[in-house]
Length: 180
Image 1 (cartoon, rainbow, N blue to C red):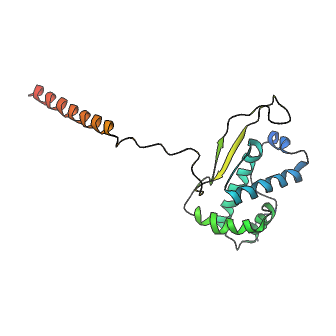
Image 2: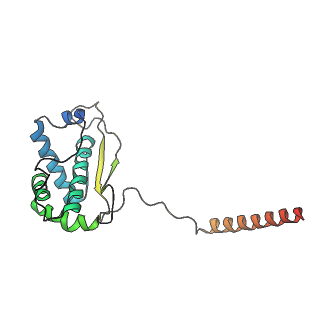
Image 3: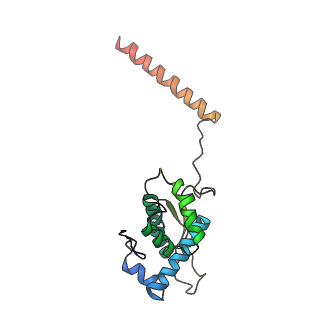
């Protein structure tokens, strides 16, 4: 039989973070994580508060890892998916979209990027609030951090490279002449 129970995912979350997530205790915390997981799997990129989204990231990673390892025929994996994902169409998306996308990937399946700290937009105006963007890797959206541009084929860089090569060959020829 399976060694996975319905609510058991081996994700360690420090007590300080757990206590500050929600006021309704563990059931409310689970519901918040389920909602964020559903948004992440549906939209593949979400923005939100760092504490809740960082914890949700760990759950998303673990669910995808279990889906890759055991597949959709495993009872324990399907029970976990059924518990943690509220929208049942997203369970199929995990197995039909994410598992094939990450079959050759080892490691994290999500990226998180910190956003600038915001002041004064919430209930406590002087309290800083750190938000992050949480996204699935290889999603169809444009990259948040763009790829660095390649400037090697610009005319000035080509001319400088050629001049550098000529200078080095000239220096090598002079050194060879001095040795003789």
